[in-house]
Length: 347
Image (cartoon, rainbow, N blue to C red; front, side, top):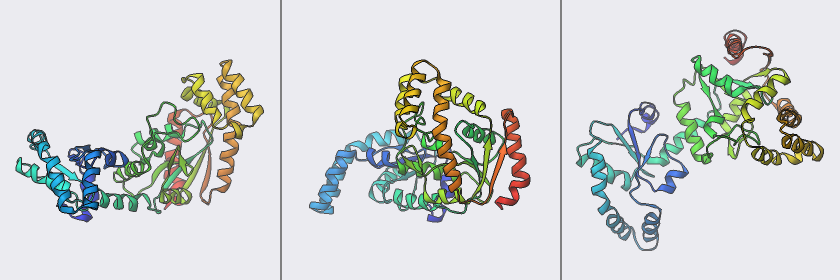
């Protein structure tokens, strides 16, 4: 058994390990440890049967039914485990109880030495919530109007060995009405938090982290309250470039998508655009004039961003004009700022 306080260390060092989640598929879908493989002892229907027996008859009847269901599967599990000799295995269920301990017994019988997570997924989730509600992260917060290229700047900082936390990447959404385009389906809120913990666990939280300024929601996912508090208390660097540069960036990002997909996205902000601007946007899209359509969208998004900037509670706001800079020059300028003026404001 791994000690409870060693959970973060165990998961941080688990890149080459095999993490096995023996819960049902629906439990796994709702949320799981990152990189875990689902090997359910009971499928959803079987779990429902056993659970009903536990509540309505007795724990003994439920256990016997569970053994009846699991017994025939043990041969197949053993066949898999024999192929995993030499690997370190980490196994968990909901509470670290019968399901994980029974599969751990089989692993040991097959000559393996598995680690069972104490308290199971429930304990892991409590650990996750403690981390993502950490309100004392040292953050450089990248802000800027739509089309500033903040996500790309984060990626560039990552390539220069800076610590980053990409909320939009973890949420599979770019944060606007168009943010779902080209993205995989968003995870559940629970899995989003697990993904956040997985990334945060890689970082040195005593050092600064670069992050993009986000609203409360990224698509349909809620940014945890602790992260939002850290965003408000972080050092906001508001990047400014010209409108033409912003238009170029937006068109390079979204210009590849079908007109019908763009129209459906514009419909999400129809009321906020107003009838006249929305109708003009539709006309521009139908004529293939994506630049005009994007410029009309800017009217709403710029106004919205300005309002959010006015409401920002952080006293540490810097306006950094990077208009006309190459991408590498922008990254260098951000790093230069962080190492001089920014360092005093984030410590």
